[in-house]
Length: 279
Image (cartoon, rainbow, N blue to C red; front, side, top):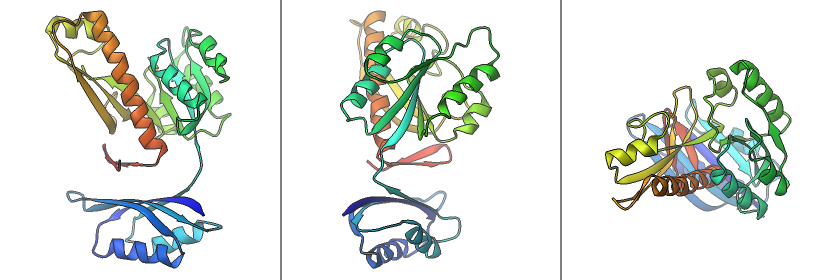
């Protein structure tokens, strides 16, 4: 028996669930779990179906589903296959370390193919865990050249997703377009109130009582892509700047790893600038 995950989005209409389940039964597929959601505002139906069964190929099933769904339906059939990722970093280690440790013990849900950094800072740690590290400096280069060198490395691998693990460079619209829907990033929750350098210092001076982080897909609008997940933690007057930074790093790790788990398990649909997440 093999596992099959089916992701469907299409215009909503009566009888969709009946049609879908009837087709799956005709292919002798046993539904293990099924979640569905209707976006009433946009009249769009979403479903994630986990199946078990014996099947040789999925294309015939995909065609059959499309024949019985409304026009403009999107059907994605995913066999049990580990995702491949590249991680982009600068100097901060806390998010990279979580990713690589999970990768080392086969609990990430994906396979890290390489790490690319614009400094050498994290090479030693990365290579100790057996992951190739590529240094691409941004200094004294036009952005186009810098990104071209990164693409050249990425394209050596069959990458499903790019993870920005505190990669402190703004990517161009052309770069984002080349990997649309495949780039995941995080940012702290102080935006847009405290943008730029030293946000924790300014948040401390303002007496902020909540620290949080957001994981999202990257789009051309800086830090405004579809949100995957968010978390917060409460702080008080006992927290100095160092304690706030430490708490911020902990929640950034949690948010990023939670988002990656959802993505690697194919639980996230992107709809416009929002997401539907089947947990």
